[in-house]
Image (cartoon, rainbow, N blue to C red; front, top):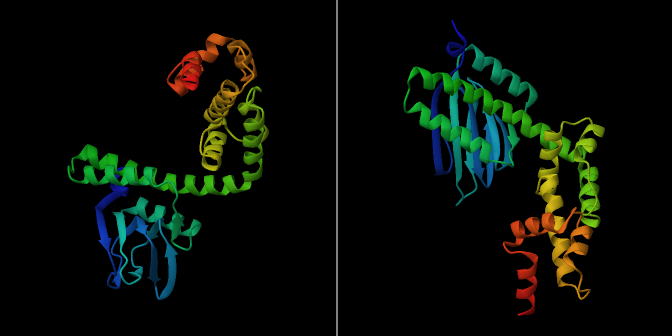
Length: 263
């Protein structure tokens, strides 16, 4: 028996604008994305209110029911999977997430994987079955990555905010993000993800946004500065580099920006 016989998707389903479910016993292991408002979950007789969106995990044999408040609905995009590898995956997930769910913030990656699963289940060729198994592995990896990112964003929250504040105060400075990541014992890619999740932009893009905002303030000031001086104050080596940068963000060169300002 090969790897792809150990893990297979039984079905992929999307239910839109649904309300209460009947009490059911899960026949297969299930992972899904729930969106909507507040959902009441009864799992093996234990009742709990959950706030959407969240990723949920159900092992086969679990007795379940979902309910919503009167007049409200929920959406459920889910896949059922089986096989020895599926049993190991769901067991590990429920050991790490004993509550059986995980609050989800960035839905795009999960929705994309579910849509990919859905389109591939319609074809059911052997090569697509192989791809489906990889998608299950990717989905579970992203669950752990989301939790890890959320934990570390909270852990480094003050430092990330102070870094952003320093960039805002001194955008002309050379900010060594690779050195900062190394100091925190993070990879540059992980640091970039944490910074983006906290501040809203990756660190370098945030730096460029701050430099652009400074350039606008200097151009709008009454100091009548030369482009060379503005370029230096914004952290660029020469006016040509600065003009190219400014044009990218303002969609016009500094000279034209000034002309529009005085019109």
